[in-house]
Length: 105
Image 1: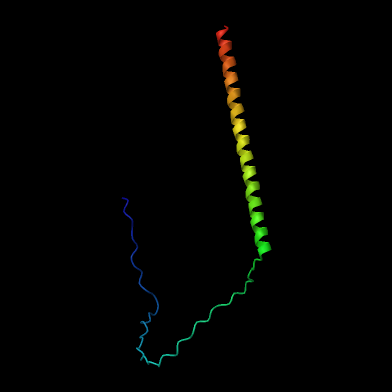
Image 2: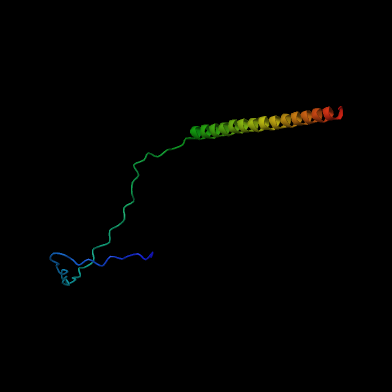
C-alpha cells in the first residue's frame, strides 16, 4: 500500500556521441632555472616613531583613562550596594509593621 513507485530509467533519445579519446603526450625535461632570491616585501604603511615626550604622554593618558574608568565602576558598585541595603531595610520595616499589626488584633 505505501510502497514508493520508482520510475524506470529513461532511454536516451537522439544521437549519443562516444567519449573523446585522449592520447598520451610526451614529457620533456628542461634544465632547472636558477633559484630566485626572495625579496623582502616593503610595507606601504607609515611607521610610527615614538619620541620620549610622546611616550610619556601616552603613559599618562592611559593611566588617566584607567583611573577614570575605575572611579566610574566603583561608583556604580557603591550605588548598587546602597540601593540593595536600603531595599533590605525597607523590607524589614514593612515586615515588622505587618507582624505588629497581627499581634494587636
